Length: 242
Ligand SMILES: [Zn+2]
Image (cartoon, rainbow, N blue to C red; front, side):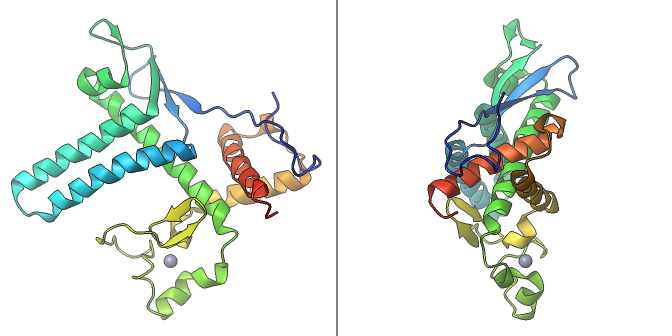
């Protein structure tokens, strides 16, 4: 199986990338169950974002109210968002029957073991979060880094405007603070991007330059990350910028 192009190949080579769009995970809460969830692609991200945004707006609106009914309503909406993640992100479940039927996302949400549903939602969210942060880290390399030093922001009183993530949680409505191409963050990008993502981007560049590490010897998470980064890099190359 050939995964990614190495740096010694022509820059504009169109070797197809073999990319698994799903990932299978063994359950930690229900023994013997394995579930398969989607990875975050650009189109899927748009689809999920639209659904979550609409539900979130309703939820924020409810939370703004003081009454107890509103908070109950907000909880219901929060469950609806989880269900949306489940329907969107769960491809299949192996080793689980619900009322004599093979479990599906719908059945699991309706009648399945709640801890398994929670576990799967958490896995989907983690998968999304990691990928989003990694893509943001990739694109932030091309930004004017000097303009985004958190210390300078604080000195200039910009940290609230820029929604620096080091500040206590800000209640304002979400808006794009930093954006490049299809990537946007709704907080200061420096505080959004994790050290893990930055390290992975650096590792990816080293691997592209030296081409020495055997992909099969790398941890699965690193290979996953490289696949995401390779796709972003190819999109850049197709834009004729590198
Ligand atoms: Zn900051």
